[in-house]
Image 1 (cartoon, rainbow, N blue to C red):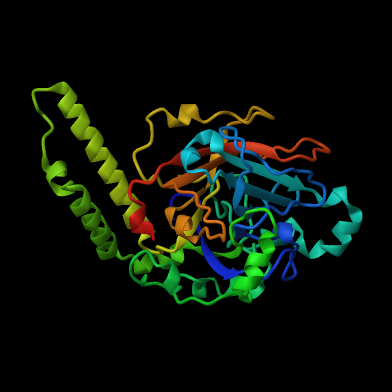
Image 2 (cartoon, rainbow, N blue to C red):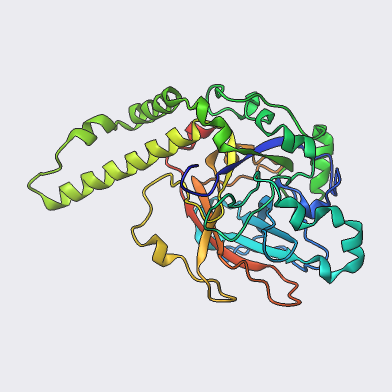
Length: 370
């Protein structure tokens, strides 16, 4: 978008046929939802557990997002607890950031030299901020390791029928960039431990869809919500809020802000309702409900180097209906917003993932996103 870092969208692609790499990139350099976390060779990590109930957390997404400066490889893993009583609880989510420098393993560097970060950031089509943005990072769009997926980014999966919010999006066509797997093969990935079925995540530039903005679609969704909830946005927007009771004025203003934020959210995602992830390193998140006024102050500094954290990406509500398993597992949320160290620090010879900050907004009406 003009005036800020570009926004990239993650879309669910084909089911993964099994564990391990299915192309030129290793498993830990693949974007996916579900399955189990793939860690780089030099990273040692055990399965994280819920700080609220003690259960093992499930992987929601694995995002491979190398930056222009720093170690050649960088990934973020988002985990959440599937226990319904833990949904929305900050302690029941965990974001882990890990790095892997090719200098740590000369043999690996020789085998995977085609993955050098200097090659990834030559193009403008990256996860992170480029082209004059103030962010010091530039992350790769070649996240799936398939160059045909990059060259045909406008043709990826924004019209997959099973992913639509409620009706087809008016945007570029879609195609799978990975071989599909049978249901039996997908289930076999899980093994004995419960996991969500793994799918590849494809990446597109939101700018490519802006010419297909469907405001009628967003307005229709909002009207359906208002009819169910008995809320009239237009009436509230036209009221003066100058009632005699100060508390009443405050409450009406709160409702107004809530609906305005939700409407803005729906309008923005209407260009591509199938998006499950929005990436914009150093950009601005898209809130689904009005955030706390002191949110910026509430985001803690990096616990490793003390630097401020910046927005990197967020999970979208459409992801909820795509988290499938054979164990009736589910996680519900409105949006989950990830903030990471602006320096993307990584101590020398460090081998365990660093925890980052995640802000979770609950779902105002999940029925809109199924």
